[in-house]
Image (cartoon, rainbow, N blue to C red; front, side):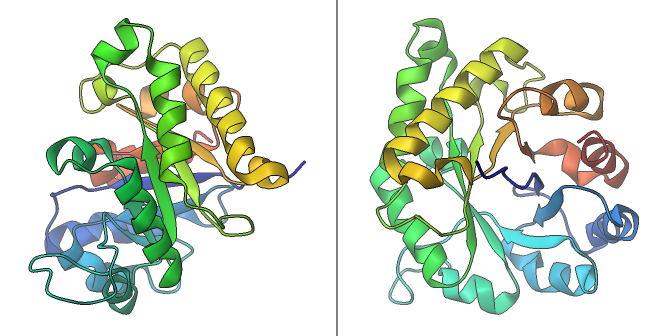
Length: 247
């Protein structure tokens, strides 16, 4: 069985400025030969300068979304090809804030995954349930349906990452119990088997949702958790390094 390579990815969301690149530089200077891969996904305007700041370090530069077409009359959108040209190496897709605020469906996310792979970007594909879905007992069904619907055909042998982010835990300070995290990650791994067959053990499954230095070690020690997608804590180098070093 292939053991997934761990990843700690920081999602800056719509935060940061050129001055904030100093935080990324501090992370790059400190990571050295740490075990997990590390990535920082800034706003699109910072991708090119971020790649320059991270040059010569193992830290990867990511983006936060892409369009499914390579070019065209899509005002305000950015294609995966343009992101790659700017210096992106990975891209977050299907984040709950995109699914809710921009009405993105599993089908659309799957199209974006293909677009990312077309441009040589490694997709980080997000799934997760709302609080109502968790409380009504639908969480497992909702998330595994998202997994199967968001993964396009032909992914075998391709590099990609899945991230489980319970919507109700993002930015709230709330987290599921370790048992709930492990149950969901196992269910996601099983769903990957439906899509990938023998390759199902290869992609890492990250946990995201109020990950902090204070809870990172416990979460990252849970079964089938191969890293974290970190929001607010990735904006400060000390906090982000605390999470990185917890794995």
